[in-house]
Image 1 (tube, helix red, strand yellow):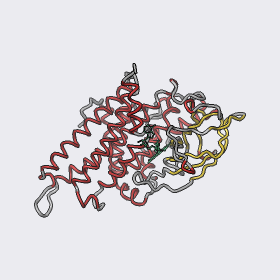
Image 2 (spheres, helix red, strand yellow):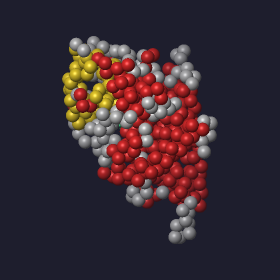
Image 3 (cartoon, protein in one colour):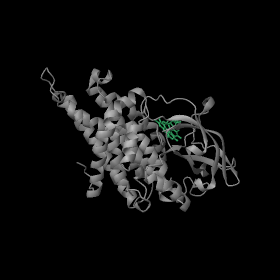
Image 4 (cartoon, helix red, strand yellow):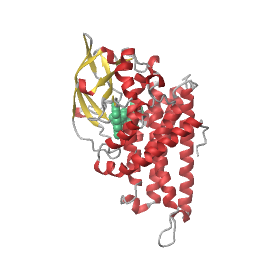
Length: 386
Ligand SMILES: Cc1cc2nc3c(=O)[nH]c(=O)nc-3n(C[C@H](O)[C@H](O)[C@H](O)COP(=O)(O)OP(=O)(O)OC[C@H]3O[C@@H](n4cnc5c(N)ncnc54)[C@H](O)[C@@H]3O)c2cc1C
């Protein structure tokens, strides 16, 4: 049951996603994690089900899902395989601008093919951890050179590119020209088979092990027609809708880690062991289950309220989107941490799947807008006069 009121269509999409996740994602989740293998078969199933075009408008052949539906679908997928869901979530995030404000050229070249499952994309954004330990305290985008008809990329290194080696397209963050400030970045939509790229090292993360989130170096020419929105407009009004979608899709994925692990715990807690005991008979476990359930419902209520607010264009700032992201990712971390305690040695020894959810949940604290940064960014919105 979901406390937030859903339409019949939203409920149907949630149930359909749950069904796909149970049949197609769950059986491969353990192996995906253990082998650190890219979940291609699971993503192929999402493609067959038409989910690559979830946010493509009906007019262009897609589902045209609203944000509430999108959040519901993502949560259900993450419950069964967070790695698959994160690759899929990055696709939706990367596709959002081209789905909402495409040029006529982009509709034919990218958007309609996406609705048919022929375009699967990702974000090539982060450059925060590069060669030679060049960490910076602020988000950085390297400069591309403007040349006749487009842009030239000269060996630009992106530090984490989910679906590296598998995505057909990248949403590429850059500055146009060395003089362009970091606050005026641009976005290009880059076809993987029309540019040179090189994976610099294999992905071997603590969690999200199936994500292939490797560092990638990009070189080559990108035509001007592939630019998303105007130059220098990352953060500008024309693309202001993209950031909430980034935050809310993260929130839904990390909520799914919390609720997926919790649903498994609901079954395990009442299982009667040969000794006759059940874990739920323990008062401490009762308290934990009640507390975790409350955290999950609170996070979900915030996520769906924020998603609905986005759909209806009711929000006066991005505050609630950031709050939804941190609330859901922290629910993921807290719930999986408590389950590691409740299920003791069996969880720690990896005999139960909780440790996989626990490792996957950790990524939520640092991905996208890292939670610490999100909290800092909330303050000017909460204290606008100061
Ligand atoms: C599994 C995974 C997949 C990813 N996939 C992609 C992808 O597909 N595309 C992509 O572009 N990126 C991707 N990323 C990168 C991700 O978005 C970055 O990890 C994120 O932007 C944070 O950058 P960082 O890791 O360099 O953290 P750092 O900048 O090193 O930050 C570390 C910590 O320092 C603190 N901190 C840093 N800066 C600030 C600040 N300004 N204010 C307050 N606190 C601060 C925070 O506590 C933060 O958690 C992925 C990351 C992971 C883990």
